[in-house]
Length: 234
Length: 348
Image (cartoon, rainbow over all chains, first blue to last red; front, top):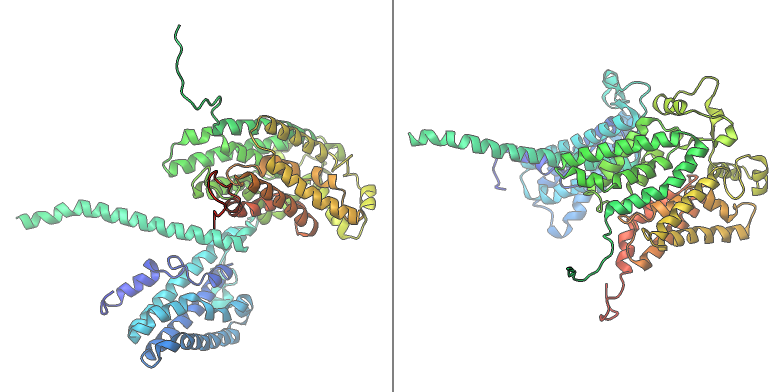
């Protein structure tokens, strides 16, 4: 990728083509463990995004000061500091969400997606690009977490955005939707196997959309090419 | 007079998938009839529903995958999956759970992996476990054998129960349902009762297994013997699985007969016989080498005993089979027979 192509390629990479969860399959531990509901997925995704943006910016700032031999320990140290800060913030302001996500917030340190972006992108690029990359990758990751959480919550419990007020405040109570009281959810969707099955289905969906998109692009190219060629003849 | 010349190999019979599956279905008939005798029409209703759902699901997926539909349906593998599933679930199961189970088995477990021959897991057992984990209450409330409850549910009653979950007037759930023998044994043992006490106080026990269940299992044994006689299956997996289960059961029974049920109970109260002859022997998901089949079967038997005795579920055939399904390729890898003329240093 050339250095100055603008920010758009970074955004599409992060959201779709190199989505950390669906394509790179990084950060599967929090992805599979915390997506028992859409709210949990959103919370975990936001926390990861915050850490990702902060660590990307910091590492990009210090990229010329750190000797290559010690870069990995330094990256981990930077990430760990931000994770601790984020964890304390969540504990202070969203205590009930903190109880739900629990152990997995400190484990953001070991999220391969974050150290992966630090090593592969932030340590080689300017600060502004590292910031955009962290944001795009984080949002892409968050969207997948939320989609998987919504899928599992719907199938397993028959609700959507249950307990959303824990994360988004009292105004979000109305966000909670239910499929009716006599809906009998499949418990397996909330249990760990449901995470694997759900992620597999999401990846399949993404591949299907890609396939359709390429078919559509080919179809459009075939139908517009002659039309575009005609004026040049005249 | 002309005679045609046929070159070798002179194979008397083509071993086709549909013939194998047909033999399996034939061998299941006595067991299904025995279950219908003891547990009522619900068994047959479930079998019919499951076969219908499975065939429709298979046809739809094959259409989506743009594969020929009729040959794949004609191999009867979806029907066998459906029948095995239907006789594993309670005869009262709501119809939509059967639908969910069949969709899971055919679409996710079988066709998404590439269809018959490519699925790493036994579809019927995967669907059973999927439902057991998701809907534990519905999946563990078995009908009591009719000779115990004394209530004769007509065909219409069974249909109403499965389609609408309603019972005929004057009958409540507690009267028609009962814990399965394995479930009962497990709960009572947890309450520190001895085997002798449990057998005295409960009407669930028959001559050598659970009442009713023992004859169902005997009928499955008959079907298994038929499969062996027709050489549809070989003896390796059933014998080693039952031997694995029995040897552990006998060992612990000899150590302490008051807290471990006698070995025949393990054979004739749950799904051990059905599992040994019809489920573990599934040619797609089992091991293929002879030595590997012995290991595979013995491990299933041992796992069944371990889960029944110390695990969280009363019966374990489905879990044991699925666990060993994952191990089957590895077992095959390490038990490949030596090719004649080659040295011992292979498969390094």
